[in-house]
Length: 93
Length: 160
Image (cartoon, rainbow over all chains, first blue to last red; front, side):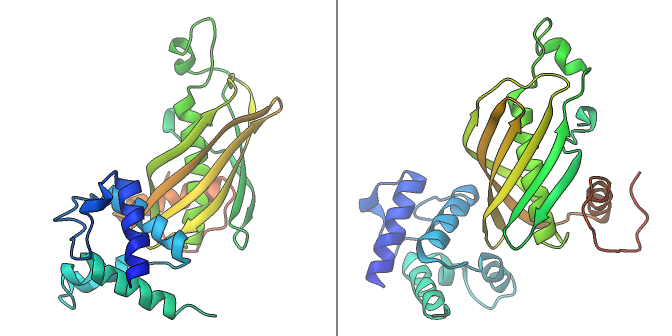
């Protein structure tokens, strides 16, 4: 998780022009870091490329809308990184 | 090009879904009111229209990949380079390559070539959304059919 967090934090800092030191595992991408939807698309693209995955953002949003998960489950960085790790583990060898 | 309708692609010549590639052609009209202002005595196609032409070409690739269920909306243009002036009457070869089809977004690269060489290139990003209404989807299906794309049979009345 630490390695994933480090890579994701670097991506957010570079893509959104945010001071890297302010990005912590408990940071909320929207409430704490103020990442808007367009910047979040850039972050998503960079994460997809970096890890060779396709983050199912739309499914996650649907799950939030359906009450099957909270925004924090997906958009607090340590939770996001756990989901990235799960997607990496599920990748075909 | 039907500049007055902002439809900048005339014909899809090739599409390879496995390779994520599309090639289209477009002929710049000889006459248009645009050239009266851009510029009288020295008519050239505005660079933003070259960018839009690449976006529409790559957008059609995304439309097909999304099975005409989702509409790509232009959100971002990266590393755009407008290398040559494009004049009235010139024929353009426009290519688009899919870089990544993500969840709710797509990234493609575009290129425009003329007989004189490379005229423009850019990386183009789209947000992809379900069609906001049936009329828009019908319009896109009708236009796609007109420019030579195979479209799903919907049984809907085509848009004029």
